[in-house]
Every structure is written in C-alpha cells, then in structure tokens.
Length: 391
Image 1 (cartoon, rainbow, N blue to C red):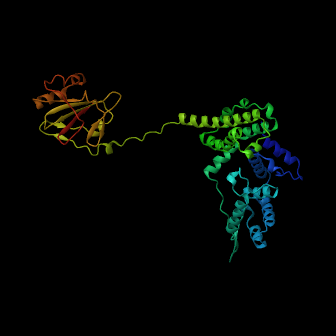
Image 2 (cartoon, rainbow, N blue to C red):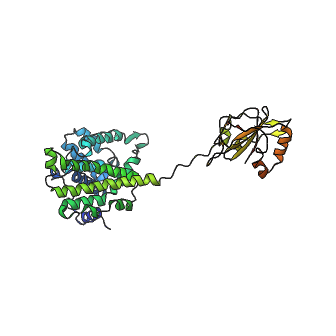
Image 3 (tube, helix red, strand yellow):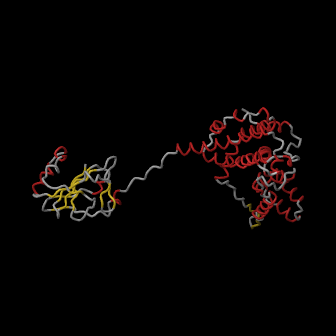
C-alpha cells in the first residue's frame, strides 16, 4: 500500500521547478494535533527531498533575517557543509516559511528559534578549525559523526507507527459526521506495525495530552478551551474523544501483554562451595570408622542422615513437602520438623555397622526399629556431627 507520504514525494518529483515546500500560512487556525502533524510532515518533506548541504543556504538566509553580524554569518558559511544537518536546515526552512518559533501546546512551549541559534553557535564553534595550515599543506579535520541516542531512535520508530492513526484523525477533521471511531482496530493496527511496550509508551505520551484536553472541553467552564472546540458538535466531540481513548487503551494493552509474556529472568546457578563454606562438621571418626560426605551433596536432596559422636544420636532430616534440603550457614534448611527426628544409640558400633550395611528398603524403618525416644532435630550441625548419607 502506497502511503500518503510516498504519494506526496512522487508528486513533488513530478513538479520540479515549483516551490512545494510546506507552508505555514494558516497555522493560527491549527489545533495542537494539526500543528504537530504539519510539523512532522514538513520535517519529513525536507528529509526526503533535500540534504543538510542543500539546506545550508536556508540557515544563512534565516541568520540574515534575524540580523546576525556579517562576520558570524561568514563563520557559519565557512564551516564544512556536512556540519549542517538536515534537522537544523529543516527548522530554518520552516521558520522562513512562517512557522512560529513558539507555541504553547507544542514541544512543551520551547522556543524553536533559540534552539536553532544554539545549534548554529555549536556548528561555528566545532567548525572553526575545519582547515588548519601545516608544512604539508591544508589538513582537513573531519567532524564528529552524530549518533542518535537509543531514546531518539525509539521515538523516531514510534512516530512512524502512528501514520494510520494520523490519517484517521485527518478523516475526522475532513468529515466528522461520518467518522466512526469503532471502525479502527487500533490494537491490531499497532500489532501489525510490530509495536512493543516501549513504542506503546511513546505513542501514549503523544496522544495523552490531547485526550485530557478533549475530556476537559466537554465539561469545562473555561471560555478559551470551549472556543477552541466550538467548531465541533457534542456528538462529534464525543466521537473524537472516544477515538483518543481507544488509542490510549490499545497502548495500555500492549504494555500489559508485554508484562504477562515477559520471560522470567533465568536464576543464576548457586555456587554450592560458597553455600557450605561456613558449615562446621566432623570429617571423620577413626574409632567408629565413619567418614562424612561432602556437605555440598546436601543441597537439593530429600533425606540426610547424621550421627553425633558425642551425644550418640542418629538422626534423619526429611525434606518438607514440595521442597528440598539446603544449607544456610551451619544449618540445614527446608526440612519437615515433624518427620525429621533423631534417637540415641545404646550400642553405636553395632548399630552403625548395621546402618552402613542396610539398603534403601531397610533404611526406611531403621529409626523405627530403634527402641528409644524420638527427639526433634533443629537443623544445626556442629563439630561433633558426621554427615552419613543423602538420598
């Protein structure tokens, strides 16, 4: 589908010789949206049809109109042509064609002429040493290449996604009575443009202010605001307000979808060595011929058997439901406080020998067969504790 911008570009090429650059004759009658749209279209015109080099004379003409001293104008003229970017040239061209330097409801009321003056001063300052005499002749110092920021690129892309929205607003302005705000599937439109959450936030910002103004215009007693929308009937004002509301809702939905579909951040694997670094345990007991397992093996298992050589207690930690055992400092964590118990051994050497020989089936009832009182485990491991087995 050929966009309006492309059609305009084709028409311009077919009418070479005529001055088809954007005019600002009726800017006083523009609404905030109309002014913003006209500005974007005019900037696009200069970017498509000209270059910074071709627009440099426009900047010089604007400087002359503003009464710049001749030496300052010459200093700008003597700089390398590629220092004058298309944006600087386009702004100067628009101002020469009648664009007001300041408008309260555009660009937060900033003065465009002041911005242009600062840009010109910067170009002169950076270009004053473009050519330096040396023994070998003239040495050209290449200007630094401007690289737009990520936010600037994002905003530029987001603006390109609003073309159909702007076309719809233009349709309303042309024929408000036949305009149907529900006929535009804005969410599908933005999805078709591959709009992401970041683009949606920029687009919402573009239309939020006008939406707030439209809502206020329907109920306000402010005579100036009423006069600004007096050309619209109540029904038409309601239509365009609904359309702007749909724009904001579509942006909100895109942002919400992004949150829902966002993949959770991959959890960084735990360094088991660091987790068990502070654990104090008995590495071996020569008398009972017992050797502790590596404490790192405790992490992520369902059962841990321990034996305290001083108290003669054999214990078993059982992981809580939907959980695994872990280690925090010198303590075992993640265990079931009811099922995790210990018992005192009357004949440790014989009973531990039986323990080492027991298989998985025998171990299930090993503690139950010991005739002693169950004592609940508290998770703490000390220098008298052998780490027997995990499973």
